[in-house]
Image (cartoon, rainbow, N blue to C red; front, side):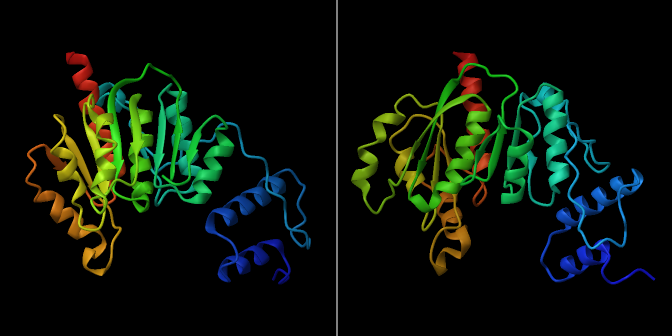
Length: 278
């Protein structure tokens, strides 16, 4: 039987005690196996093995099947959804898209995923508030105009997810913050910025009234995003969602709670279509 002090048992004990993550254990075990294959590891040593350097090209995991044809079919590449993916799978997805000369966007990333992607792709743009990572393989001129408006600063993480999506789509955008209905004069001071918009994304929690107010001043679609910001009766965004769905303004369409990416993507498509028609 191996000694209780073997590096492998130490690593597994740390995992059992919650002192390390599954991804970290995987890297350490992979490093041990690599060194063992090279005849450099003593399995009874008290020293924990140092991680091996990350390979420059990571093989795509067997359960990862990136849709490289989506850009041709739909106009934009596949977007990587962070939750549930290992760091290795997230990096591999970016490498697959980048090697195919397609722009990359990852959403809802954990702090570990953000750090790993930034390290693997130093030119990538990381937005910690939006929890996104954006990598442009090919820059094209900006087109269209889609401002993003928030009711309060608590809505910023969702609004910035929409902003990063629009930037990934090469759509011109601008953030207008903290113009909720509790201080209606604040929006009136900013509404001139919406005069030439192809669409407007409006992000609000609480009772979700702002999209109706904005829609009454513009001649374009308003994509309303309910957020989970609010007190008990807001029910995690359901009150805002229902309020937006019942908007009396005819040009309001609503996406899911906290769905900044969906709002950005839909409004970006609208802007691009309008620019082609013009």
